[in-house]
Amino acid sequence: MENSAGSSFYIQYNDFRISDDKSGYRLTDLGPYSGTADTVILSCPSNMIYGNCTCQATCEDPEVSTGCQTTCSDGEMCICREGFLKKGDQCVPPEECNCFIEGQGVVPSGQTQVNGDCTIRCQCQSDIVTCDNNYRCSPGATCEERGGVRQCYCNDGYTGDGQNCEVVATDCADIYNAGISDGGVYTIKPTDWPGSPFEVYCNMTDGGGWTVFQRRVNGSQDFYLGWDMYKDGFGSPSHELWLGNDKLYYMTNNKNYQLRIDMVDRDGSPYYATYGHFRISNENDGYKLVGLSGFSGTAGVGEDALAWHINRAFSTYDRDNDGWNAYNCAERQRGAWWFGQGNAYTNSNCRTHELYCNDWSLGGDTCGWCSYSDLNGDYHSSTRGTDIHWQSIPGYNCNIAYTEMKIKPV
Image 1: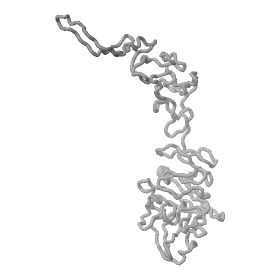
Image 2 (image 1 turned 135 degrees about the vertical axis):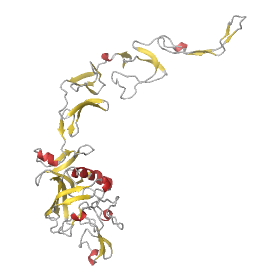
Image 3 (image 1 turned 90 degrees about the vertical axis):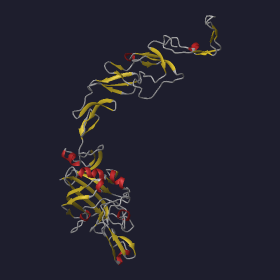
Image 4 (image 1 turned 90 degrees about the horizontal axis):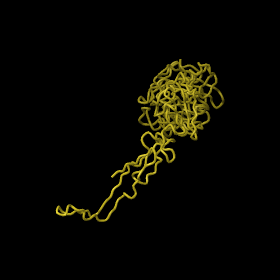
């Protein structure tokens, strides 16, 4: 049964009997009584009805977004009528909540709420609502709802909080061309890059606008890492780093880039190599070095140490793409680079480190090699064949203390 308050209850008798027709169908027995009629709620407070226990919206959490605050001891109880919110032990209309705003409803406690055209932003703290009537979207932003939250959001190609949106540079050349000539860490987002903007170091020397993607300084960063690490990048933009092959692919395939490599040997002598064109392919193609031309510089006079690696895929110790079935060059040389099938040869000097440090021993007088350069090898390694190297650098190719690889648009 249900009373006028909406409270349901029942009565049960265990021995119900009536007489026959001659006796007038008299109620002769009921037996023992049980039920809930003696505990029934006769009426609910104002703005409440009797119903199933459920999570109830409150003035502090009108959308029940922070979890259920209702404790159910019975299956039924007095609950707020539709359109009312719990405020303490009472149910009140929204306009009686402390953080109610006309035309917007109730602002949840500790949260902000923006009106439909993003011109007013209100916040509820300690049951007190304050509003900023000067809230406006930046010219590079749109007023819309995302994930249930309405506010100003920066458009693609911009970064910021929605009120202030700035154009995201695609590389360090954009930053330099905007009149910024101080080298340092900046945020960029290359054209068509599907991820979030990321930090890079911008080298503003040698004409400015260089985006650094590799640097070795003192060996503090381990470069003997796997495929995924080289794909995503590692290290610090302001110190030793590899920016990431995915980022390098998106950059070099949306603009024509030139490459500059600076090196300093252990004696402090500088060397450089520049290329008028540089490009790598995507991951499915092994980040192959597909574009490299226009060499000039002082690193390897008469011999271009990177040209040998053209059209060779990138290799790491856990992704062997060098094409040499007999050996894993990345593992042998403890690096990651555009290795290729080199050669094994016999020379009595193979027993010493002084022949060429990029050649690794195969035992006895036999040596092997699979690169003319590898700037991601071990830093000042004492193991033959694993050091950072660049063909024709004085010091048996390996006397290198500093490297920096960087690109900028042609």
